[in-house]
Image 1: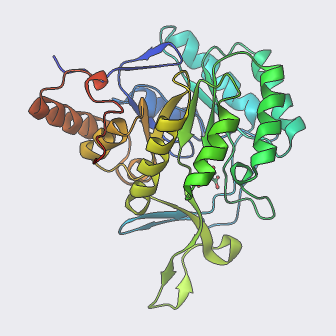
Image 2: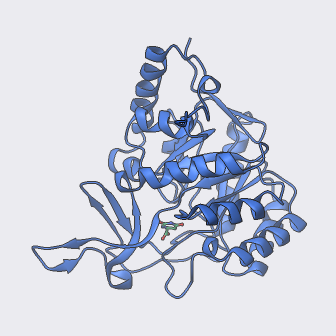
Length: 313
Ligand code: DOR
């Protein structure tokens, strides 16, 4: 029997695949569709203290090789997601859900975590440190000192399982420096990667950009980003203490892509662009494709190959 089950933060999941925050997770109806699919669980849209309409449309565009987005964190606010997840927890007491959130200051992050602590939430928190799309706000994950300060503040406030969503890094020295910071804290996991920030996709017929916010600049996802995602997963797998697990996100369109993320060290994977394209039935296809690869290689569990990517001498 081939199993794609996994464990993260000592919680068990029937399948290692789930949605990436931002895709199919805006409201109860979308989350229900993921909950009813072959995915192992869901993560909510990143909730902020106060609900937000996000950036003007068009703000998402699908390309042949992926997507560009500048959503600008539209969401219903943290209280909405806490209520919705509480209802899912009641319905499925054995299932662990992820709640994504993001603040615009250290104080806001602390307030978010306090709210979560005071609620019925018993799942895993994903603190988003990497949104590239709020005009005037930098991606926090590129400011190493601030990441350190945020984590110190967050863990002074919260002792439940918590992971961080990181932007992609592109320099081995940055992996070294970020890993030193992350290893100081009792993180359950890191999630690599968010979209590659501020790409520009253009329509050359129209000689125009394809999304409205920020003059067309937006986060790039999909096939374009897989090598960067795998590099981030593997670089952190080699540098983080073993208690910090890894969720791999970026460029998953097939079971082979899931296999590669796990081979690089991921314990779980998230699907964004391809989920937006295919809808929640994508998880059934990806699961079947991963099982076929595992069967052909003689693997029965993810532990048989997780992190076992070989290097050349
Ligand atoms: O690509 C992204 N888009 N990453 C995020 O973290 C947030 C999202 C948005 O709402 O703009």
